[in-house]
Image (cartoon, rainbow, N blue to C red; front, side, top):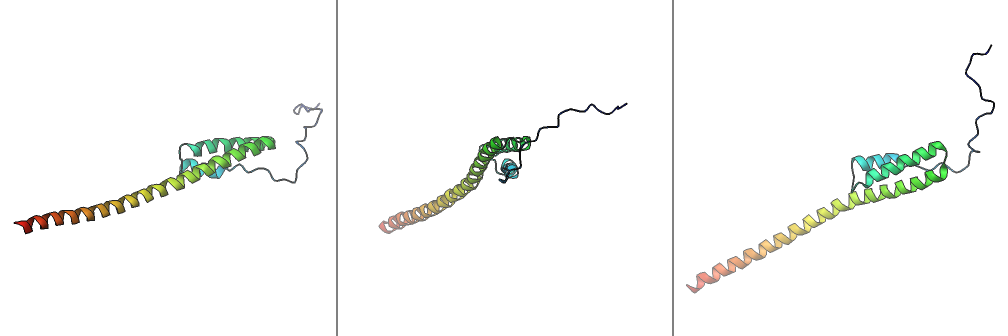
Length: 124
C-alpha cells in the first residue's frame, strides 16, 4: 500500500524553452536607493513599485510584462535621480548668485553713503 502524497498523472507544464535573450532587469536596488536617500516628489517610491512588479512578473515567467514594468521602473528611477541631483545644484547656484548680488549691492550702497556724507561735510 502506497501512503505517500497523491501523485498527479500529468507532469507539470514546462514554462517554455530557455531563450537566448537575458531576462529583463528589475532595477530594484536603484529604486530602493532612490526611495531611501533621494526621494524627489515620491518618484523613488513609484520606481520601487514598478521594480517590484517587474521582479514578480519575471519570477512568474511573464517576460513581456516584466520588460514593460522594468522600463517604467528605469524611467522613474532616472527621473528621481536627475531631480535629486539637479535641484540641489540649482539651489546652490541660486544661493551663490544671491550672495554675489548682495555683496555688490552692499559695496555700491557703502560707496553711495560715503559720498553723501563726505559731500555734506564739505558744504559746511
